[in-house]
Length: 513
Length: 87
Image 1: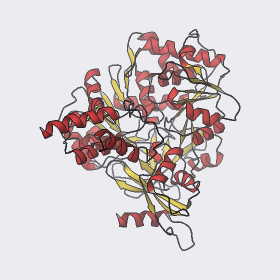
Image 2: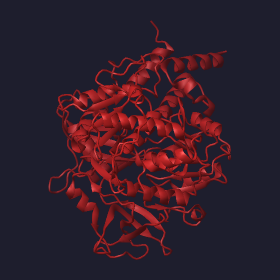
Image 3: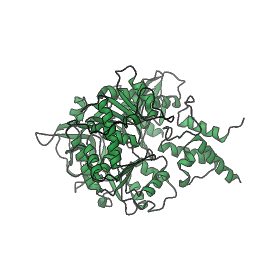
Image 4: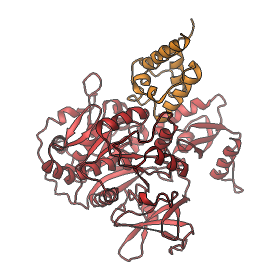
C-alpha cells in the first residue's frame, strides 16, 4: 500500500476525527486530506512529477505534516530535512537528489536562498513570516493551499520511493536512505502491531519530523486513525506535561536525553501523567538505572526499549513484560522480520558471542541514493539467493533465549541526543577553518546527551578561542553536530604509522577529564 | 552604569548560546525556542545560570516558557523572584 492511502482512507472513514494538534492548529482527518490535496495540486502545477524529489525543510509544524502527504499525493518522494541544517549541507542534498522543489518556512528562507543561489531555479514554497508576507523568492504556502483539492493521477505504485532520508555517513558525506512505500507500510504495520496502537491513541511527538523516529509517529498515527500532538521541543518538559494532560496523551516516544531530563526534575510524583499507556525509547539504550527510575515514576505505563537504524527504520523491541528479567536487552526482532548476529565469516554467532547484527525483512531499505559502494557495504547477499540483507554495522550478542543486547559500533559514529554524527563530517568543517591545522572529533560519555562531541585541534592562528571555533561549527553544522568542547593541542595523538588516532584522542581526553 | 539583570542575561545568552556572536540582533521579546537559540540542554544551562547567579531556587513549575522563553521574560522572572527573596 502507498503511504498517502493511510490518510485518504481515514479521511473517508473518520473525517471528523482529529488527526493533528499543534500549538497553532487542530486538523481533522478531512482537513489534513483536503489541505494536502491542495498542496499536491500546487506541486503538480509547478512541474513536480512522479518520482521527483521534494525537500520538506521545516520544523515540527502543521505545514510539515501537510507537505509530507502532499508530496506523496503528487506521486513524488519527500525528503525531510532537519530545520537546523545549514546552507552548505542543504546545497549538497539539493544537488545529490536533484530536488524538484523545496517546501519551507519563512525563518529558514535565508538558508534556502544561500543554498540555491547560482543554481538552476527550482520551485520554492514558504510559509509567511511574522509580517504575514512570504519571503522574496518563494511562492506563498497559503496560495498553494488555495488550489483546487484535485487528486493527482500519478500512476505511482508501492514499490516507488516514499522517502529519502539523509543520514550522517561514516565517510562524512550524507547518504540518502531510499525507502519505498512498501518499506514504510511494512515498518509502520510492524511497529503499530507490537505497540498495540488503536484509533483511540493520542501520541505526543517532540522529536523532529526530519528524524525517522519522529516522522513515523506521524505516519503511524495516520495509519491507525489516531491523533498526533506535534510539539517542537522538549526544552520545557513541564509545558509538554501540561499538553499531555490537556490532550489525554496515551503514547510518548522518547530518546535517552529526554528521559535524563525527566529524571533530573525535582518535584515529579509517581503517576503524574495518568493518561499515558506506553513510553518508547530508541536511538540509544537507556541506562538500566534510568529504566528503573522511569518505571517507578510511570507505574502501570508500558516501557518499550527498542533499537533501530534509518536503513530499516526499526530492528528490535523488548516486550515490556520482559523488562524485569532482561533490563539491558533491546529484545527481539519486530513482527514479520528477522534479526540475527553473525560472526566474521557470516555464520550465526552462538549465544554470548558478539558479532554484527543482520536484519532481514520487508522494512529493509532499497539502498543509498546513487551510492552503490555504500549500498553494497550495507546490503549484502543473505541466506537465500534471491535476497539482500542489511548489515547494521552494530555489534550485538544474544542471551540463551535469543534476546539481543547492544555491544558497540563497528565504526566510529557518535550518538548524541539520539542522533548519529559522523566525526568526519564535523572534522571537515573544522579543517575548512583557516586557523586550524588539523582536528579530530570524538564522543565523550555524557549523562544527558549520551555522548558529547569534543574536538581536539591544532591551531595555526593562536588567537582563536574555543567560542570562535564553536561559532564557526554552528554556522556550518546542524545543532546536534556542533562540538560541546574544544581542546587545544600542539599535536594530535597518532598511530605508529603517523595516522591520527580517534581512539587515542578519545582516551587522552577522558584521562584529562 | 551598573550592569542590569537584563544585561547579565543577554551576555550569558550571547556567550553560551550564540557562541559570542554579538552581531545577532536578539530582540527582548523574541522567543528563544522559536528562533532556535536554545534547545533542551540549553534550558538546563540557563536554569543553572539563574540559580548560581541570582540565589534563586527554581522548581519544576518555574521552568516554563512563560518564565524563560525570551530575554524579557527571563529578566522579569529573575527580578520578581530575587526581589521577593530580598524582601
